[in-house]
Length: 254
Length: 285
Image 1 (cartoon, each protein chain N blue to C red):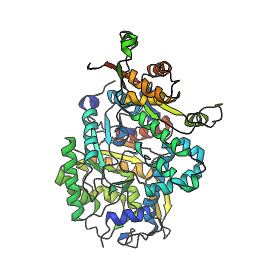
Image 2: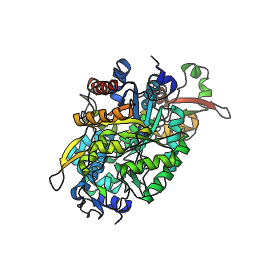
Image 3: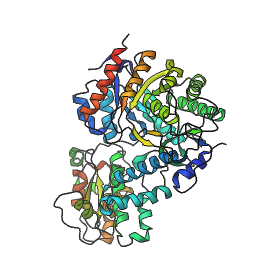
Image 4: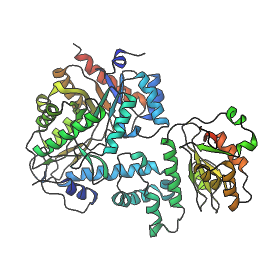
């Protein structure tokens, strides 16, 4: 009697499925609940990974609810790679599709923010441009530059106040979240990612820069939807957090 | 201090510990008995950030063992070429003192199950695992060590003993072995054989590293004692005794203490390494 990994896996992820024949204890009797050790290892370790990867979501739902949700999620979406640092990419979509969570419509975006923080943490290192480099460029020439942004900079747009929710759940004495849309740029000035609240229009501007637009073209795109957008404050934020790794004029190599 | 093991880039026959980021500063300040460190390969497969920066600092100071937990070398399907490439990249970049993986599977049909799952010891498994080890050693351009599993059940279809199976894999592929003494104790208790007999049958001349760790206790359907390899507490006395039994036969080896869940403060882990140092001093030639 041979036990295929297909049979083993199916029984592993389905607690009510019969344990495959051909698995024994030390006295050649059927293995019985010994199989549950593997079931338990898989479920517990993946649940733990989701708790660790989504601490704010866990806090918002409560640890017990998170356990229940993780139990369903890990069976529907087991990791697709051994890199557990990225586990949970499918969680925002999964949360959005759960009828019992429709009264908490901001949860998928909270999960997206937590994924963005993890991506930022593991993103490649980069060297920000120096103030000297910026000083060499005349203001009118600057607008014709394109900016390369660090891979640790992660943009999240939301219809929900995700920055306030993040702050309320990570900082003592933070104000209670109000309603309203908030866009966030996760930056990594050193090794610790920091979510930054963006002004209206800034997400369009940053997305255009990430797409290779010049500062001027990016401004036009942002101002088309948000005429009040002032790129100065957002540029200062990018410089302060070391997000810009190169400034190049058209045709120039960085 | 850069000792000779670091210069020669080998694991010294001294205690090592599984590295946890929360111990970074303490290890740099006071490594105590610890002469080398082991990392889980998959935690260092990001593109950058603090994990790789810390690893760079640690590897300036300590010999590093890269221990894979996700390759699924016993998988029925082919090895994941992306994961092999990531391993090659990490090992080329770090040039560690050792690389090891497990006699187990963890991925099937592209689902990674995050556990080390058991294999039947048959001729078919032997041929497949030997082929996978050849591919790994080719990809990383070095010998790998293969670790014996902790077992909670056995396969009716097995025709090889675990020790003969490992010896034959080593003979066919030239891989070395990582002997986890706690796994031997756990498997022997769970499957009803004498752990010393396992050690006596084991090809100790192939061992490049020894593992120790803590385990939990449970019972099976028939009320028999069942040990769970949890790495969440101190190594128990019978496992220290089994280490002595092993070192008496193979002489000093690099000995690692693993503590992966409910990780204690550094002094507790360092004390475990100190106990391993005492065991090693007993057998200094």
